Image (cartoon, rainbow, N blue to C red):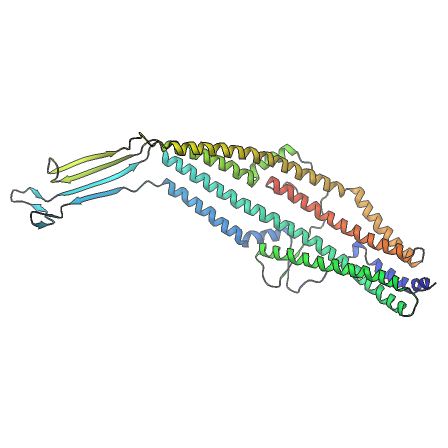
Length: 434
């Protein structure tokens, strides 16, 4: 009897608050006054313009490109000179004697190293490959940071939607608890009924706190990526509608695209290319370089003014660069094995990401959408049934908990779809889904 009195006194308050739990009426949570609203395109533009990690990697790319120019340069010529310092009791004796013959000794030689076997061209090719590798390392940094940016962006949207849900539930429970406290004091309800609702409120406060901590953590990551400081709150603006249609993609085409755009794979391709070029260069080092040196000698040769040409050529009797050649051969085999392993991983990762996207989109099919719509309509009917005393408190609480779980699942599913698309884009290396 006491319970029936409580229901009659409280049903109007409860039903009014509970009807506000419909997803279509969700209101956003409180946001700090200094708010930066960004859609995903705006966030990526700011990320590309201001991210310091990308800027640092860009400097690395430019540094590698400068080495191409350095590899093209010839070795500097070497000037050798010698002249008499002291002779016949005189310092720096130069000039001519009485007969007009030159006195003193002067020797001048200019030497130039001539690299053979295409060494300079091979060094230029290696420098170009190294610069290309730096560019792909830059793309890899950008790829990873962009994936983190998008993941944080969409996760905040999901967490804020959860916050809206929790705020509505908290408002309803607060109204319910105030009414029940009055009824408890009047002796119209049992304390166990009040504690049961109070337990829901305590659990909800815990969920609100954990959700707020998660938002704070991801906000910190997102602000670092976008180089935003201070008390600014980044408010992600979601697309109006999420495309949940199953894309018509060919796994073989996706894999071929990944072989052209996946940064991990391309870096491994260039590592093999570099070591192959290095092997060719090491073999060229076994061919001796030539040093040419035209010279002029005054008064220290068989003729007073001697003009000659010096040629220096090391004889490769012992050192023919055998050790370095053998070492680089093994490096080539190592990189070939790494490339095969990377290719296997690439195929598996792309296929796995595609399969996960299909599984995730299947959960967002029209049938499941109809389920959510029907469930929320049923929940409204439950509120009406509680108002008309056709169900009791325990049954109402079960529906209350079930509603929260279903709403959280729906919000998480939206996030899962977005993250599954981003994972496939990440593995391929370009955006193949939107």
